[in-house]
Length: 375
Image 1 (tube, rainbow, N blue to C red):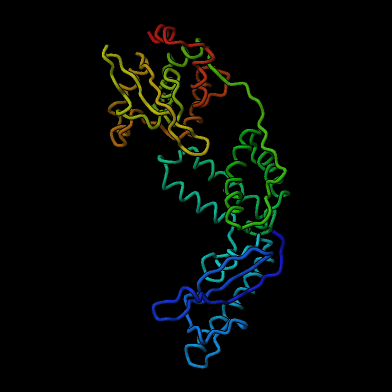
Image 2 (image 1 turned 90 degrees about the vertical axis):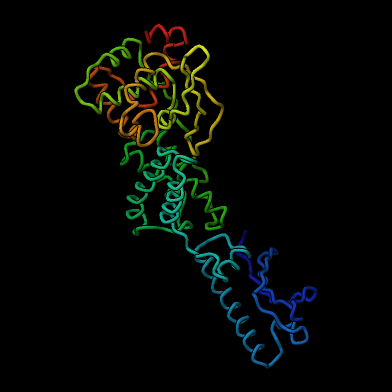
């Protein structure tokens, strides 16, 4: 919408009189042919209303007070319009009225809004958002907190100050200073863009700073373990308890194919026994990229190895306290310890919790071969 001339009109609803017989007064803002109006919570006798001047022609105390309020609203609308022009915001009649009547605080800042949004995510942790997702958003904020002061010369910026140039600068910063790979940068940028899209929808900014920015990911070869590597990992004796714990959880994920979040949220309710006495995991899978959405229910056989791991940690204090099956640490710690484990085992691969999910495909582990491997 172009920055057109704003027209301000005050009028009354003649056909919708109040119980006291007076007509409600409305304020209308028109910009480029678009308009919106709102009741100003004042009324006036019809015979005292001057439609041409948009005010009361009475001289009584009520009329004087009404006219003073109308003049105040008129001046406030002009002031808010000027503020929005300076902000280079998308100016709409609705936004002007929101600011005039205090329903919009105006200059929304980027980092302030992002931290507010992350706070809302944390209240929904484990329901709509996984800890992994929340931590990713926090990391984006931390990176922005480092770049914004050097780029803009201040601690925070308003949404309208965001430009395509800054988006490109942030991309370069993540690659050079952050040392992140292309695919991780794309994931960070998607988190960032979520808030700029919200700002555009709420008319906090006029232009899309991500316009022209392409979120193209690099193709990657999945890391997986061979039979021999997995056996080496399983047979390794660890004297450090935390490494033994992380190894066991990793092996459990290898045999079940569960994602990190599914292992972390596994509870006794997800364990069922069939008519033959065999144990199964029955659990809704979780999509982690943005929001946790349960998809189809998965039925996964529990073979001797994962069963033994569940039994091993059944009385663990964390499991008892949280009602979970395994004392899973945060994903960041798990991945850090898995690197230590790989070094101890002589495995020259970048072990992460996600690698466990590749074992099944990479080794073509069908149920019968899994049973042989587990025995």
